[in-house]
Image (tube, rainbow, N blue to C red):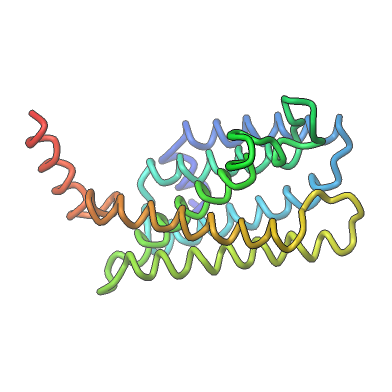
Length: 208
């Protein structure tokens, strides 16, 4: 069996959830004639290929981390393709969850890089400093994402990518998301590792 088939068979619920939200937001993007759709789909395919490679090379990736990645993908697709529910902006990414303080865009960047940090720390679990590797490599993922978005904005008018200030805030939220993930794993262990399972059992025994 190919690595992709192995991953799909091991986590069918995540696979169906991913297929479902990709289908829904593809239809939304087509109906709303969102140009970002033709960037998101190839980027998503490349991201899935990277996840499959990590799962095959350093896995198996725990289901909880695959769920986080799939949720991140859904939030990302929704942000660029769905409409702002307030009706004030064209896309969900510009929706202010807390007016003047937190936009959907920032939430997605923080959540996504946090999820990437956890997955990359898991991949580096046999290294002496897996949390540091997870943090640093996740920032690389963030830089690649910002670079791709800004290159796209150069060629597509009305791309809704935002200006340099928006990019700076994205990077700040990358740091916040990664830091939250590192703190979480430093307390509970890296998901899927022996320490992570032992730490979870210890916490459960303390609660009981």
